[in-house]
Image (tube, rainbow, N blue to C red; front, side):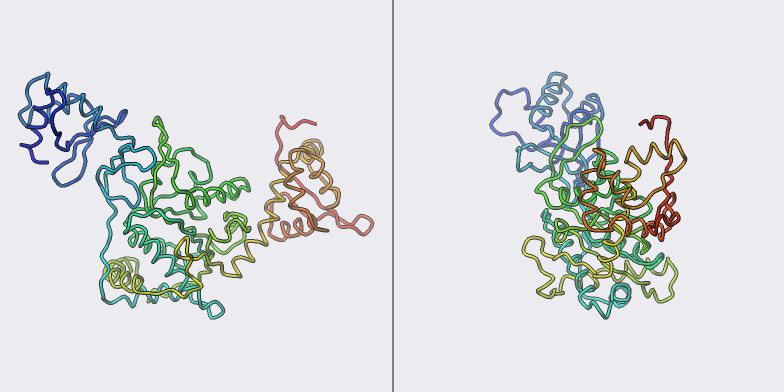
Amino acid sequence: MNLSALSKWATDLHVVDPPETPKTAFFYAGKDGYYLRREDGTFIPLTTENQVRQHLERVGVNDKSAQTAALCRIRTEQYVKYVGPLAGWTAGVHTLEDSGGLILVTESPRIIEAREGDSAFLERVVTSMLEDPTQPNQVWAFLAWLKQARANVKAGCRRPLPVAAFVGPRNSGKSFLIELARVALGGRQANSFRAMSADTAFNHECAGAELLVIDDVQASRDHRARTRLAQAIKSWFFAGALRVERKHHDVVNLRPVHACMIAVNDEPEHVSILPAFDDSLADKLSLFSCQRGDFWGLERKAIGKLLNDQLPGFLHFVEDFTPPPELIDTRTGAAAWQHPEVLRLLQSIANETHLAELIVQNPDVRNRCRRYGEWHGTAAELQRLLLGSETTRHSARELLSWPNATGTYLGRLVDAGRPGISRGGQREGIQTWKIKIPTTPEDED
């Protein structure tokens, strides 16, 4: 809106029921104050009414009553329920589908245009990291995922998309894959583990980033956090809307266009941050096995330059790529894909990690450790304690449903070097186990 139109709109505000009100440059965001749209399409905050009056005076609206009328009209007609960036949405005012309310998106994603060009380096890095002679579809599965994620962002379309987890050696290039996806999907990313694992109720920052990232440095190995992460994968990426919470603000349901990547080292204690895999996640979580990428022996600065120079050509290659039929899904566009070795690794460590959590939660084990410094007994005796307590009974019944499950999981925990769990001696030919866990004075019989 030019200044003359704004002046006319403001001076006409004292008229009751004007025939047509031009679109205003001012918006009211409640506790966040006011926002002014500049000529370049960006928005700046105006924290006080006095600042709004100053801008009105600048366009010739000097009458105080006209200014007051303008403020009232802004508050009633230009109220926005949400202000900030929103993943996949262009800057501007948008109407919520469910409630009809307005939201003010302050920034657009930076979409780099795809065009034909050299992308040999980027193709080589991706291929060298994901190529596996035993699993020829792995490279294509990643490209199909990236192709669909980019298509969603370009279209501003919230669509279910599997979370992509990458498991590989330290310094193999997993962070480079994340950086590649970030710039391909609009340039914005957010660390999302705390919000997705319910460690914090506030997920406002995640709403504004097209790429959500979790790595094994940020994440917790607590079984409960992993369970909440599994639930979040379903509710964040496979629901029609996301419940966005911000401190001291009303909750609003929005439709951000998200993709999510998880990067972990291929060591059991790091892989254990991933949610326990079951049928409910089979179409929602992709598992990629990574090896060290071929970066041509280049330094970080040279790698960054090649990423910027070759990205348009690489994106053209991705957009022009047609996935094999088995990697296409009618609901998500890109089908979930699981590397068998990663899946086996995840399944093998999940149960014993869960058992360790149940041991810590069990009041009988805790009380024995408080009194005598440790619990000592057979796997069968431990299983009876876990099944006999209301605290652990339900989970233990599911976990220990086959013969010798407790002993098998205890052995895996010892072999993995789990602190506080060790093998004891033989009792009448039966293996015993020793468990030491930290206790507090509050642990009672």
